[in-house]
Image: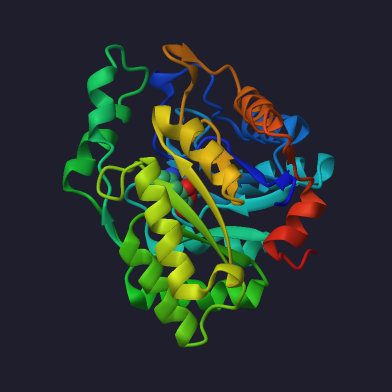
Amino acid sequence: MNKKVVISAAITGSIHTPSMSPHLPITPEQIAQEAIDAARAGAAVVHIHARNPENGMPSADLELFKRIIEKIRSESDVILCTTTGGGVGMTVEQRMGVVPEFKPELASFNMGSINFGIFPLAEKVNDWKYDWEKPYLESTKGFVFTNYFKDMEIFCKRMREARTKPELEVYDVGHIYNTAYLLSKGMLDPPIYLQFVMGVLGGIQATLYDLLHLKQVADRTFGEKNYRWSAFGTGRMEFPICTTAALLGGACRVGLEDNLFISKGVLARSNAELVEKMVRIIGEYSLEPATPDEARKMLAIPGR
Ligand code: KMH
Ligand code: ZN
């Protein structure tokens, strides 16, 4: 078994809103600094979304991404994985813009359409900081996160042109078969890298049984040696899913995008704190966090 584990840190995302935690990074400077600190704590990859610095709303503004990316690149050799999932209501063109513009080493690539229900989060908040937050969350009762085949073909093409490796976000079992289809058509380059996204309402839930199921379907579909993979669970299942993934030889992802708590009822103060916890857990099993260069080899990322 490889002693090294690739840890990704998903810094801010587009699911949690400012009222849920004062520690959620909002401005480009905060997002970049959180990413740099997460890398120092042991993350080899940072997954990046941008937010409007005035009110924390998820944003596709390339100027904001530029400020985040330039600061991270100037201080760290961590692998950048930009989102192309964006946030609720963004168009495919808005979501995709970051790839040709910044040619990141990795970018998320969402492998199919799902109901994407983040409305239950609104029930837990009493005091709203900004007007947009509640309607944004509640609108997802009627929201399908669309990733049509015609759009996935465009994502394949643009990522290939930018020499960006796709991190294939698998929210449910069918997304593995969607991946196999695109691979069979020569639209994706092997070895592919899958990210099992577990616990979104509308997708597969974050149980250990479901993780094994996803892994077994992927093994049968691609052959165990022919793909790389990572997993994460949302909310309190972040650490159980990540620990199991690491013990099974996969990579894992922690961060405030997916989970705001360091332990029951205690908000994490930073992404670095979540990464440190993951490093501690794998350390108990004599595993170590991979450096960015080790991660490039392990995930078959060509490098810049
Ligand atoms: N926020 C997620 C549930 C993306 O950014 O493209 C998965 C994600 C997708 O990170
Ligand atoms: Zn994301």
